[in-house]
Length: 257
Image (cartoon, rainbow, N blue to C red; front, top):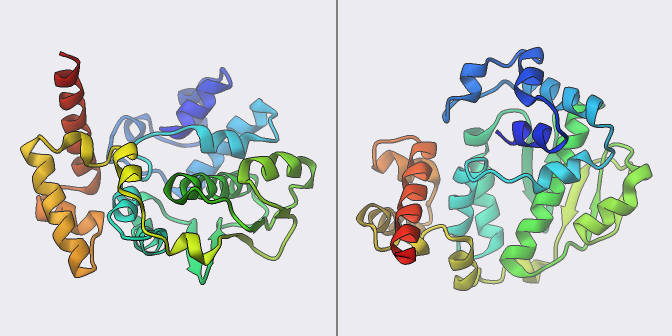
């Protein structure tokens, strides 16, 4: 979905490019459909070849879709601190995709984009680091202490520095982003969760209240994950997110009336 939106932002026929990359349209139309990493990379590289934009990774980070990180988002925001939330979110990575992997090592988040020297993975790597930086700004109001990118991005390093909010080493041995431990271990303010609208806007809905209760109990037990919560309600993680999104929409309509 995000790649379709990215293609549209450049005025390109995303669905046509997806078919050329070997992606079945039926999968694109299925909310629970999955695309192989190789096909996704091919799709992204076809967009890149026509967009001629060296900052495409940064632009992809700004293309948001609520379903992209629904599993990770719930795991993250149900935690007490960003560090605990990131650790939980990274344990859910198989839910949202195969291939790329985040790893939390002390105060540093490493990103393995998969096949090295493939253009699609370079774009995904830059996107991933910018998203992590944006997420920490939202959760803790904190900028990274530094970042490194495995591939050579020297030609647009200045744009990456601006997007990340820190110095960037490129090329480097690994793609990483580092934060101050104080910010990683600070409690996530309730106002942030309210602002991001995960549960707060939907609390008057019985279903959302039930989900919130399950998550609260799981948090206390130290095992809140989107998979576990979804299983309690007999549905997939994406179906759970869609149900919660529906609760939020219903409440907004009531508020407007």
